[in-house]
Length: 243
Ligand code: F6R
Image (cartoon, rainbow, N blue to C red; front, top):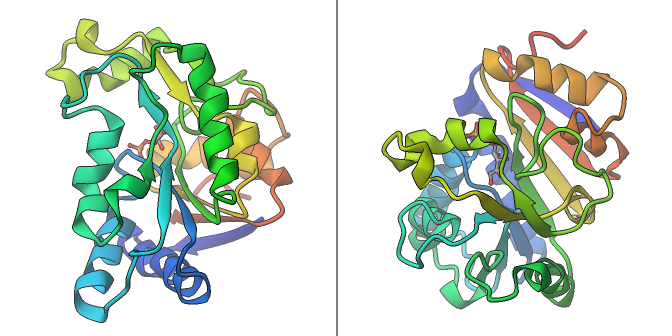
């Protein structure tokens, strides 16, 4: 595991964008693993800037998102497919037909997980997976005690997650879906390069537990200790509990 500590979050964006730039130069048809949430937004903005000003092209790339709510209407603004479109993929030349997410509207939700893993495999696997970390160490919707070997699957959202995410649904916890489809930790572990970002004091305990603590399902991101190529990029606040 490579740990990079930057002073301020803004300094992480060019570093991580460099990894995308190098990958796309080497492999223009790379498979990108995308995360929603606030953490990667600076990286996406920097990639958009490089696309507009420096000709960085995603025209032959494809993308797979980490997770999706179950049952949100196709045009719902909080559907992660729409969030990633708004935040990133519509702002670069990624072909929308090659931007994939778990199908939260699938008739057979149990089958949707394995189908998504199969689609990732058919695309050749994820080359570069960007990840945010939850304050409890969660990755995607793999909350504490999720199996470290889990695959993409249907999950019930915890009461805590629904309360946390109610802010995106006008504060109405009842509007937050009860279920999700999420890549499993085992799925995420198959990415060729995993880049975990964490910014701010609120993430400090999770960063320390996942980077320096015991490998444990209680801290899902600790699974990255077993990843053959994981990079952790944190600001000083998020790094403050590392020894
Ligand atoms: C994103 C995701 C989540 C977030 C995590 C951190 O697709 O699945 O695990 O990465 O909740 O969220 P932020 O970045 O908003 O702090």
